[in-house]
Image 1 (cartoon, rainbow, N blue to C red):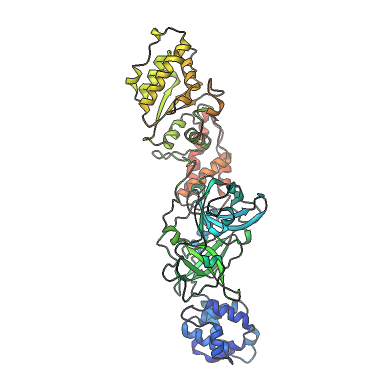
Image 2: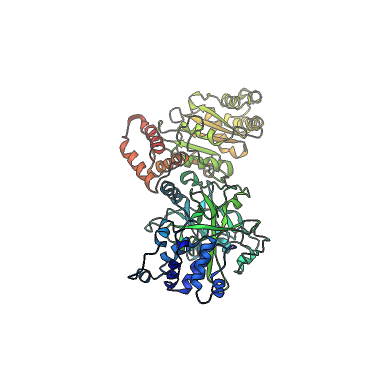
Length: 604
């Protein structure tokens, strides 16, 4: 190197040092731990010329250029003295300007721009509130690692856990997760967490919790493989389908070699808008577990849980803390390698609640604006709802309802039976037999009581004889499945005022007694006769809204690997709604859906 061949240059550089304290701080930050001596030791070896001794040592070890680059950047050297008249120019100048941080190297601009656009959608600011639900207690950062799961630092959420490590009562109300806090002008997009928000958590190592000074050369390794200081937080909905999420790789460890250890810390420092700080991965520690990554990217309070990415903008670390020496001076920053967390094989892809259908599997057709119906299906599975109604214009996608239902439900556990109201029989017994035939219970249907043998009025006979026999036949035909009876076109073909209407209304009123049956009425609007209000969920179809179109564009773009700046999907949705005219026969819905798919796939 040019520097190593010019002793006079080093003498002049030693004389130009303006601050011993800053020189020592930078020297100890840049030096290679384990292979180089700290500044204090070098100063004891040569008390008369400690800086010159340090330069010689840095040249021998191989980090002189990096040291000089840091010193110049931090203005520790007196540039006027170095440029005094009558002195020859320093030969180090050109070399230092060429590569100031060889440990970092160079970032490909295309990779960086694309990586930051992607990260801007996946990064979130996490605020933990006090019990009053208004006063902030702590702030940190997190990022999506699954459709519904955010990864952050474990210690950030300690306030919300009891002695057994379980969430305290109503703790879900005390976590605020906000995406899209980028420009400082917006509060971002707040996504609530589920009531059962904690997926998994590991705490600090006891030595870290007690803020003890760690011995880097002879580490106490016990427990550092278990205390990984992370938490997985489950959000209320699967926003990762719209924003994308990072797939943690157990094989992707940080690079800590002399060249190529570049990292960037993406964070919300002090709760501020998203920031990126460059740095280098310095060391993996302890030697056996390598469960801590030491790095020197800038951080602040609120950076805990920040995302560390490598030169390819792939996750390599979860920012954890700052390590200090015995004098409480910062030594370096610490992070948990994400490979260590990935190696635990946690359920990151699981979705609790609605896992939305936004495209059909076989035909690739878009499903836009039908999440109300999908939520109703979940309620019919898990709650008291037993009857779903869908009303709206005939070309608004009503009949598409059955296809959504089949997409959502597994064929092993569910059977969807579709009947047109135009083909419903006139008599109650014939209607009951037709339903049983569709679900595979024709043999049982043959045993239904005959109305000709009834010795009571027909409504009483239906309630006392036909309905109980029908219930038994449905249970027998269903086996362990749930039967979904879909009756379509009820607005075009209303059920006649015959015994069939009495029978169907008896089914609605007594549906709680048929646990294996759910009913979907398409084209029906209003109160369902006989059914309790809590048993019915109604949907009235309408045209797509801007948020619904935007949500679909986000999902399709993410699936196609297209990164978009926040807000771009909204402008695209606005443009689509303005460009596609209102057409006859409701075809605007199909045209909007088609164009939304094209836009999402082609425009990056």
